[in-house]
Amino acid sequence: MGRLGVLLLALFALMAVGSFLPPLIDPMYHPMTGVDPEITRATPPSWRHWLGTDFIGRDLLSQLLAGARVAFMVGISAAFVSVVIGTALGLVAGYAGRWTDTVLMRLADMIMVMPTLLVVLMMAVFFGQLSIWSIVLMIALFRWPGVSRVIRSRTLTLKHRPFIEAARIAGASHLRILIVHLLPNVLPLALLYMTFRVTSAIIIEAALAFLGFGDPGTVSWGMMLQWVWKTGHMSQAPCWLLPPGICISLLTLSFYLLGRAMDEVLDPRLRKEKGVG
Amino acid sequence: MTLFRYILRRLAEIIVIFLIIQTVLFFLFHLAPGDPVARMVDPNMAPEEETALIREWGLDQPLGTQYLYFLRNFYSGRFGVSFHYGAPVAEIIGHRLPNTVLLFTTAVVLSALVGVRVGKYVAWQKHSHVDMVVTMAALVCHTLFLPWIAMLILWFFAFKVGWFPVTGMISPELWSNPASGGLMKALDVLHHMALPLLTLFLIHFGSFLLVMRGSMRDVLTEDFIFTARAKGLPERVIRDRHAAPNAALPVVTYVGLSMAFSINGGALTETVFSWPGIGRELVFAVSNNDYPLALGCFLLIAWVVLMANLIIDTLYACLDPRICY
Image (tube, rainbow over all chains, first blue to last red):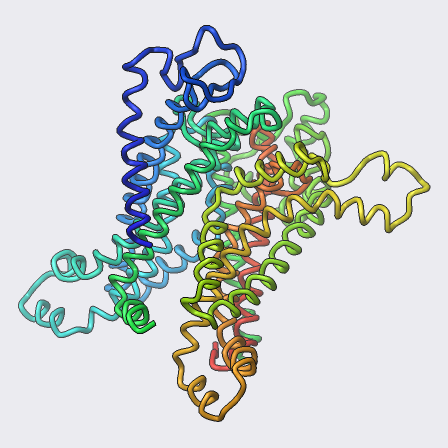
């Protein structure tokens, strides 16, 4: 299962890297501005355009490749920021305890129950058109609570271990204990959560773009679906509808499989069960 | 008694959290670039209406006073006037909310019932072909991109084979005809609801199945299952009476944790199928810069989410006698 996930991910990474190629071959293949002069409507796949074109003659394959790049960019950067925030707050909450813990965890509870997509939509109300990086930041700011809860509970079990007490007796400061002694022990867990956060970030960005609130300067898979939807081509052009949706779903699936495989590595209980069964 | 006190404490917490959300929204309303008065007052409004609205919301007062006006209006059920509809926001929300509740609860209850049953069944046959196939299918359902599968379903069932209507919740000609009876109307709504229901069902069914399967397999390793086997109870009794009720508890927790995710999905489904619900109204309000309506919808959704979480936690305490608050 994990191997399938990695294989799919490698394929998507290849797509993302390959996205730089089409515009170099011919400016016509530029995902955003390249228009085939001979085509004025959505066309099915042909030799010239392997996946067909959209309603103004832009090449769908090059859009799909560019979408892979955007998905990785959004997913990984949002996941990274949210895991950094979540790990830092989780460590502090678990280590400090008392009211710091209460305040941070109540805040986490509050943010956790809010539907992130709708929250980012509300931000779009106030700040108008959001750029791709502000979308990333927004997703990161609202997706850390799950991570911080897990990191906190791991920190709680770690902080009474002898090696932490030894460090304290040796005169280590709180900051040193947090960074040098606790952080390396929670890092694998944080990494595991990063794979899950990548998917949720990609899905939220895609959904946002689908609803028409994406960054108009980027070609993402959600944006492609939005074009199909808004131009009313859904009923006529299934070959335009299929590729972006399949890509989003498969990328989500592959990160999910990777996460599950990592989970098995980190949690010996799951491994044993697999061995016995 | 302790449960009662727990509920009271949680209610107090919810009120505080809700106040914080409102406060944040209020300040965003004023700090975001642009004129806050323009966000509350429709540019196409008559001057006397405009002054009335400015007075009602205290938009000519200092910020602190405005904040109090904002809270007072909110708690007396005045959410402002929608730009697009020209009607009070509370009225619009009142019309939309039942539609969302109907679609959403039907979908969640249906997928929970089916997902839990199937999950229970496949967990019992672990590592068989049935288990492999069903689990993989559930995994795919769980990871499908919702707007896309909604569009595919719409394309196939509404455009290609034409069994179901493309948009909306009712057929206007049927409802305006005085001759059509209540049953006809109910069937009409069901006919319109089938496709959005199918979409939400597919997405939720997979998650329920996966959670139930996982928790069922955890329960199977417990001693009381071993005891039940040793007593010579039939497999079916062990599965349905001993394992399943215990395994169902994490499913209840999961409903609470996935609430935010499902609400996002609900809004997307409503948008694709033009189902006249709260989620679609929020998306619509945001695209039209209809600030009062967007604010009203969002606050209502936030309130519902918080209350639903409280209900789920209480339910959990009732189901699991080991939990005490």
